[in-house]
Amino acid sequence: MKEHLCDCLNDYHNKIQHLKKELEDHSTSAENLRKQHRKQKHKHITINPSQMCDLCFKPIFDREFYVFPCQHAFHRMCIQNRLANYDTKDVRVRVIISKVKACFEHIEPSKRTH
Image 1 (cartoon, helix red, strand yellow):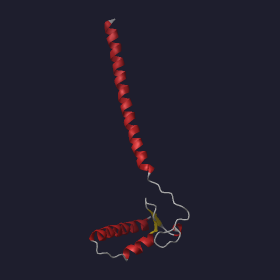
Image 2 (cartoon, rainbow, N blue to C red):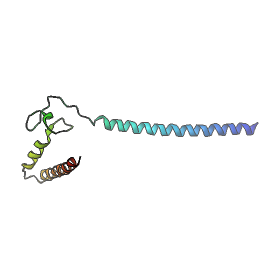
Image 3 (cartoon, helix red, strand yellow):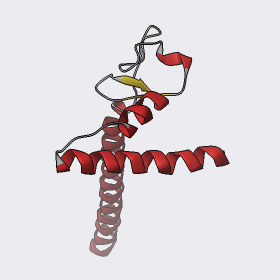
Image 4 (cartoon, rainbow, N blue to C red):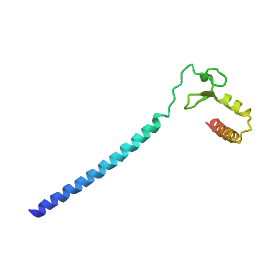
């Protein structure tokens, strides 16, 4: 009888350990989903139909545009024209401007292939 009872207890112990492992796995998955949801929560921007380009002040939906998290919206060509003619003595700003220009150059070829 003692041996049978020990076997039953071992079986229950193994089942409990298995269920604990499953619970930990599900908890980890749930936490990962919560993290992904928090990241995705801020990945959209709502645009008002009357939104204007912050450079030319014409309706944003007239042409291809970019909208930033701060809600500023610009036509692609307005940004490119502004950057092409932008001049500053601040070296840090020049570096940033050159990086943005490089991004536009990277975007343009990929747009032509699609």
